[in-house]
Length: 349
Image 1 (spheres, one colour):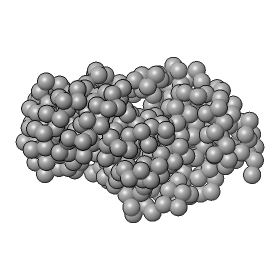
Image 2 (cartoon, rainbow, N blue to C red):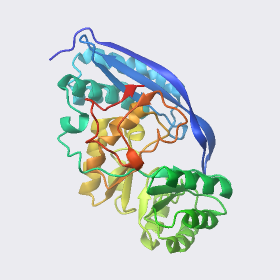
Image 3 (cartoon, rainbow, N blue to C red):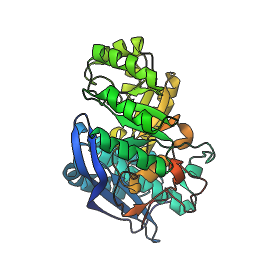
């Protein structure tokens, strides 16, 4: 079924964060996203967005630079139902820039599901009851501010917290969070900040605070260091920066317990599903994370929840304001069954 009168466009947004967001590599107070619209001749509009990360070589400017070529692929294919062909052609056209490719992939998936008048999870044949609660991230800050952020998260009903580490006061930070939130499910993310031996020593102390797991303790450039930590850690290890593309999954399989995938790293929804299947085949648990993003992209990620062990999809929850609405998340629970719209559920508020 070919599309008629297909129109594409994109726009850039600077979105303020509710709090300055600090990790071991730095702090920022806003995020830039690029939203993509693909509209068919019947007035159906597919919405997607890129939340690029400079750590992976992408910015809003680089996304804008390659989107004309990527959207030309969609127009050339001429049938948004050919999702596999579109993603393959986009990879052939722009080898890198996965966030830009993801934005177009999401918009096309959203459009196809809207044309079929079903939510995306139903198009994929997934059970909306098999969903998860997203974690909510407490970024690095002074101890009193981190305490206040934690109190606010509890007041909003979040029962799973992720805490950023990578400082000389990591133990004190976790002790502070646990003092405020003794009952919540809690895990930590060092964002590559520790050396292997330092990581083992830190994790041995952190294990006293009833943590679920530790995310990316050492630099991705040190795969043997990740193995060193994994073999000695009393807590499970999740790989994020070490797990970027499909090809990375077999490489980390004997170095961690959990593969942390992100749409903005892998380049599209179909590629994300391949990565999930590959991680499962290698005996890994799977978490889907995100950047600081709008609901224009987070909404699509939520539809993968039935395939996951963990969801870290709080990117839009960290914004002070978001022009888009998405999948309902009461108390952090990804409520796919409560979505009353077709497609991903993303819409301009």
